[in-house]
Image (cartoon, rainbow, N blue to C red; front, top):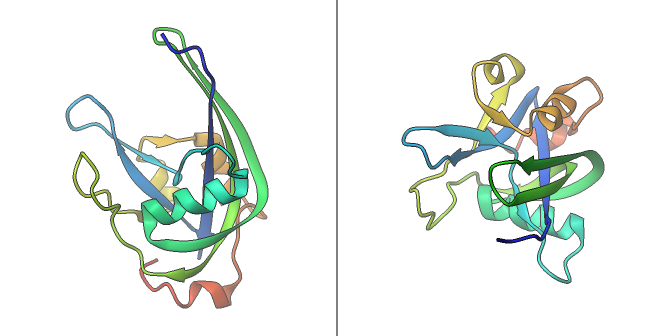
Length: 151
């Protein structure tokens, strides 16, 4: 039984009113949850560095971590799992959107979602996504969104 707390980061990028999410495949067949790109912090890595690295690994896009957006915690009663996720707002600086390579569950292609589309999905962390999409949340300037026509 692991009694360590997992420190996770994620980078919420919103462009043209849409947030970039990646699919997470649950262990139950066919269950997909859309999540903000992120993952575990490696030893010696700052929170912002980890968020930018994880964002690149999962999307193929280089991004800057701008501001602290949210902090969330998950404690599972039925499993030895405890995580704290520090979320940042971010801005894409370059790159081409692509699926995460060599993932054990196959292709994990990120997608842009509007607030209306998110209402029909299972997403995580919900509070972070809501804050990012709120007016004044995680935003980018229009000159940054023009180079990413996949939105």
